[in-house]
Length: 357
Image (tube, rainbow, N blue to C red; front, side, top):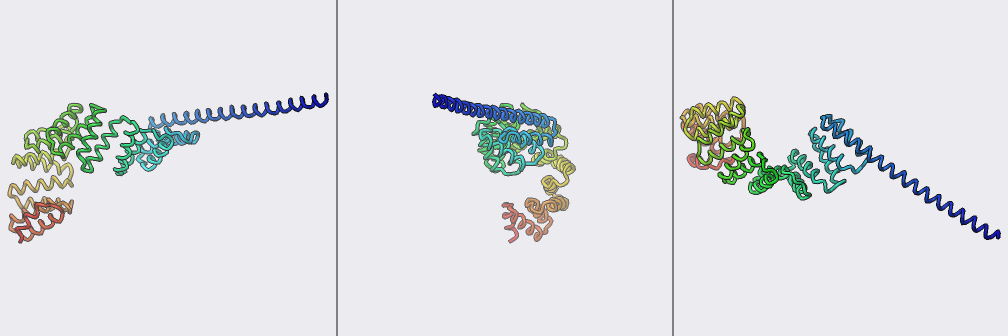
């Protein structure tokens, strides 16, 4: 009997200890779960405050808020991403890229982070890195027309005009009213000498946004290529009406007037362009060219001298100065200028140099 009672007692004791062990494990588990919930709540509160401070342009407070959120939740992709956006807003692009990297480590499917990292790289002139990120954003499912638009911009800058057209077209497919995409696709078509397509795109951009002064300027340049000088002058004039300080439009209108041999009007426009931007070598050279056409060679040389003083590598100014010197029978000076123009890559200078032999 004593033996049986002893066994029952031991069994009861073991059962109590075992149940106590299970109970302790369950209490610990509940406590851990509670802590996790508390952590997430603290992280979300700090994150939401960061968003509010960001919207209120309290940028340093926003950085502190997002940093606090990340402290509560170390793989908080949205907090890293938005802190990166704050750094980007402050033009602290290296810090922004680091945070976008961290966001993508926490969530590799975060397509918007690829796009934003691409923008930061683009602003740092890392064009290939930016282009890669824009592509990754698109592959990750981001339907953001700007990802295509900025891809097109890089391709355009690199001389890949067909690729630029493709990217701008995809941007337009996502946003039918994307005026900048129409404008820039028009410029890509212009580089490809598809002038009718360019005109169509510029006109579409202006239907969407009638106040785009640079689009009128671009439209005028295409019409000038098509030798529609009156149409070009009208478009340049519209650009100037929208933006009276648009010195490039004055210069371009002057060039179209020069094409029409309206030299007095051209001179006024070139002088106005120079008045608005005193170091604008293109307008200074063009003013010299008009003077040269008027056979005012000494006045022309004065303008070409100014252009060369501003830009010693401006080959066209050397070429034109050489032509003016030749007209004044300064053959040695002319030959020296033409040789310099050739060194600077002006191919037509070779034709003039033949007269020096």
